Image 1 (cartoon, rainbow, N blue to C red):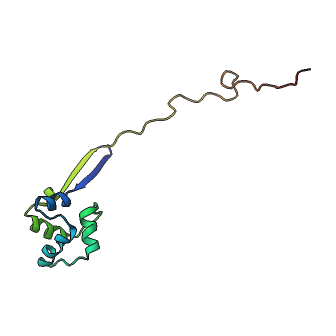
Image 2: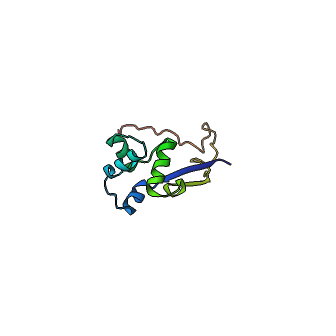
Length: 110
């Protein structure tokens, strides 16, 4: 059975709980731990869901907020739904008169 996995990134919520309301508030805390990111990189880290993150950055974020990676990332997994069949009826023979109507002939009135 195929499984679909997804995750939720909670950095913005952790920052709000710690009274950090701007992405720039995080920069000095990361710099103290040797992580030097540009303001654009920090903004993307806070506002968007990262596709990949280095372990030193993850460790620094967890140290800043005294949390574990499990509090920062919530993983969900579920069985993949079976694809719905659009036309479930079997196709009939197109040559059959029962399937296709006969073409009408339009003739002018005399």
